[in-house]
Image 1 (cartoon, helix red, strand yellow):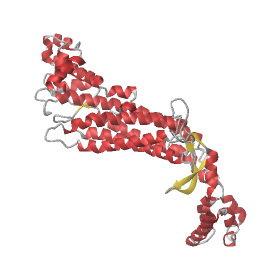
Image 2 (cartoon, helix red, strand yellow; image 1 turned 60 degrees about the horizontal axis):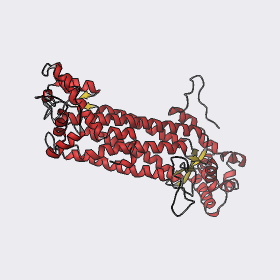
Image 3 (cartoon, one colour; image 1 turned 45 degrees about the vertical axis):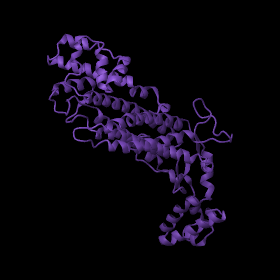
Image 4 (cartoon, one colour; image 1 turned 180 degrees about the vertical axis):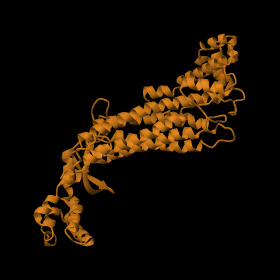
Length: 446
């Protein structure tokens, strides 16, 4: 496991002691179910309910048997008397192990969903904070058109909302128990036992199984986490890119308690986006696990154990990594420093070239052929970029343009607020602002 990144609650879910506790809980529930069917005497089931697991006894038995469930049953049996003969009655190992694994995945998703919602709250807060702050948009890494900086965290929040929907659907599909015997036929343990145990555990009985719960469910668990990891990497990558010296529009929290206080061993001036880079690195790890999870789906006949050794790593590691990534990125988004003045400086870096689409459309609306308008505006934009001239002045001094659109009208085009006039509309559409009353139609800011 990736112990370095483990947080206490998630670490507990995937701890060996917790897994053994779940195994014992399942064995006890099975004994109670047999007692309901009057196969096990009620007094024996009551005694089994008081059974204890001794890890030292388990280690002793495992040294001899090299089989985890056999060793577990014998270790638990040492805490019982004659009633120990009813432990594991009618079961196969994976009745216990796979059902317990479902509980671990279900609990992991509960913790991860809570973490996603905390990150969504942080994104919403920063989106509203910078809703009216203009910045340059970039496509291909090149200045495009201005936009509200608040749209960036608003977009992240909306995508995380879709991840919540996917994780909730996955949680329903992994909350499955299987108590159906060696090859899933119920020959040694009737369906009533499975129904009783699953009800006690808050799981749904598998509609059909063989010796294992089918691994498409486990693959979906890892794939859902990999998809979430990709979104977290997307957010972290944007923060990293905006922190570059040449851009400098945001910075990770730095020097505060719990955050990085030194950026370089040799260069005291460095403030590196180390936390965002950490998120990106762990996302790569989880994506790799998704491939392994898919390869675990096809097993020989009713089962083999080629999936088992891989799952011991990929399931806990994926959950632990996502839990940690969410924790780190929430702190980064909540505490990142944002520099509106630098954003305005970057907006002006190209000396008004970002207004070229507005000028072109104005010329088209004034009667100029679109291709001609495009070529004309492009000439001024390229000249402004290469000669460090002001695009706005070039446009306003060109008689081919001013004969169609007078200079005062042209000057009104050079307003950054124009590009942000529908920001509120977008925020309403994703629930960050209240909807407009039907009696008060939404108006664009001009």
